[in-house]
Image 1 (cartoon, one colour):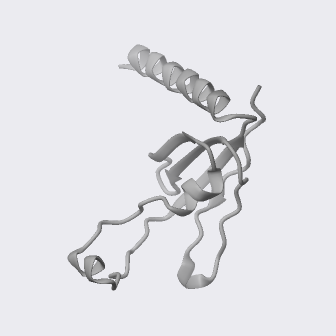
Image 2 (spheres, one colour; image 1 turned 45 degrees about the vertical axis):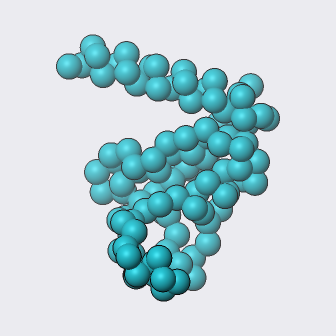
Image 3 (cartoon, one colour; image 1 turned 90 degrees about the horizontal axis):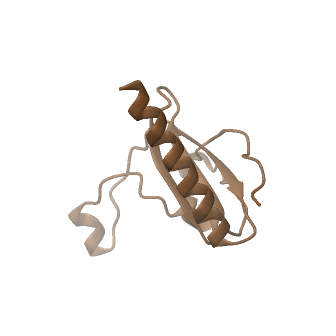
Length: 109
């Protein structure tokens, strides 16, 4: 069975020296735009901390192919996590959440 969701936290900005706080283990993550609440990313993964830290938040450029990275302007994001015992538990829970969201949206539209 899955645990409860963490509180929403601001997505860290490396330029400010901020750090990501997430479990090192399987679970579900959700990232949204802080201003609008619009979904930015969602997934069921083996390692929450790794998935959130490697989230692609900006466009890639040709400069990065040559070893230098262009500065990326990150949108104002926030995230939350839900740790699970296994990746399979996370996948089942994520599938249920997607199904509920789709059912809700079909009744609203």
